[in-house]
Length: 96
Length: 206
Image (cartoon, rainbow over all chains, first blue to last red; front, side, top):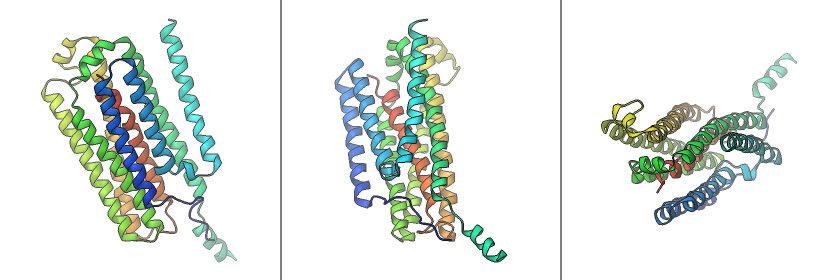
């Protein structure tokens, strides 16, 4: 019984290379921003760029953008658990 | 009849099931590192000045080079899957080897980096580190545990690729059955993704 080998159409060489170039540029931007700025803003910008980068990795390299909806929805689970953990931890830290 | 049933069982593959299992495992990995990131942020808020002072000791260049190495290895990993799906086995094997070599280069840099730190007397429970104060001890504790656990994941990834290389060579992983290669790729990309956060949080505190 042969089954289809993939449940989705995978992106080609070109998409991967463009994603890689974007990731390298974003890394350079992060380094530049943290060199110029000081304080809380640079941390926020650095984390924001890191999240865009991990979004690129998830969506293109890890094929999440090409997967069926189930996988996209399932991904919300760890995000939600993580957000709740942050919330409860900081409730404890701030109102102790 | 029995023979047909046997054959069916032999060829049965569950692509979606295999993918689901891998993603579930990756979710637990995300939460494992996520917990440490929460710990990091709590102590960063508590010891703002100390974290800044301690982070100055870290080499941004070596961190940036390692970021570039991991990002490139993610690219070659993705390309090895795409090559195999297009039916080009040799190109896929080539990209798998490049991915492994980049992983080894990352660990080589990590070895040099940790070596320099240890040479300067900065390692968990060292006399010099304990003389610096609580914030610095926390920073370097988190640094060694988080980058150490990450490096362990890179090492495990390289070992997995050795297996996948031989699976591809022997025809267990083929253009028609890439799920083992794809799942190893998912693991590798996750390790890359964790480094994307580790790099600014440890090396780019100004």
